[in-house]
Length: 472
Image (cartoon, rainbow, N blue to C red):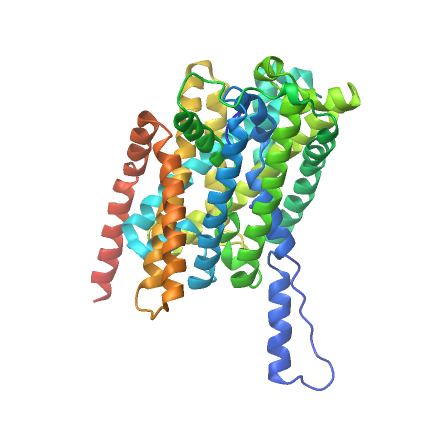
């Protein structure tokens, strides 16, 4: 997702007009056609990669340069931590298969209704804030080609709203259509990033790299800051688990897609940062607002800047598409468990939870407009900062849920116990470290955000109890 700046098919019915087919053959055909309406390995991977790589990654080298070359170590630590998280989510997709909701569904299975609802509530608001930030990033990137967007508030707001509702319409056409858009935009956004990441290796000058620790703080403190920063760049690694029932063969596809997505973004992030840091002198890099574009200009001339700017716009547009898909699935999953108003559990003919998606897009639109209202800009920035923490908390509870679900009521061998404990300890410690490094103020308000959902939970609990009493 990376908020620093800032996841269908046509159903074919074959009618036999000769002799009837055996039942097993008919069931197999229906299963194949059903799977064709779902996300496969390629589109699931693009959902993960597309959601992780937003517009913010194009600014990351400049922000990390102020920490020093130690930030490269931060990328490595974050990638290793995410490797264990990927294993956690992969195992959870097998333990709790074909269930929509991802971290919400896992937390609910491990800790019960209230914690599941609380995690979903914070995650839902966080994604809405992040989508608003992504939209602002998209409009900003487009201003390179349409200058009026940087001078006219009306034009910027209109463009932002148009992008939100265009992608809402696309996502309502079915998961196959939105998956196709996600795959296309992911490929297009990777082109400039890969070009700079790999091409830049031939233009590196070692004296351009900043000092290892470019701050006045201790190595542990600066490393904590870089790990927290880089961790946010991997937010979205769970994307394929949220619409699990829309993924073909989820028990195999989700673990494979998640691991493949992690490998792709890790290579792009680390090599991209190395190349940009090695091409642009540190003093210039720290002041740069477009580090990838500046590096491309040094490598291939002024026109290369437009290629990178187009990549930023496509990256934001693709990330917005993927997160709108996710944000429609989450309230649907909660409503199915009777923890959210029933209306959010409605689907259209394409199997899309359209009520939740439209409500989410209204929320995104409101948050985005806040950014262009002078009196609300600070509040908008605070919401975006808060959203980054609110996405990490579900990771923490998903890790704990994995340990509970893996060890409860099962006979494990010694080797399985060791593997389970190692996965839990490393993943939990990594996410806990990232949360603890977010700062006291952010953690405090993150806790308050989680608590704002309590009245809705109490109301839904009372309704469910009343419904049960009436049935008796």
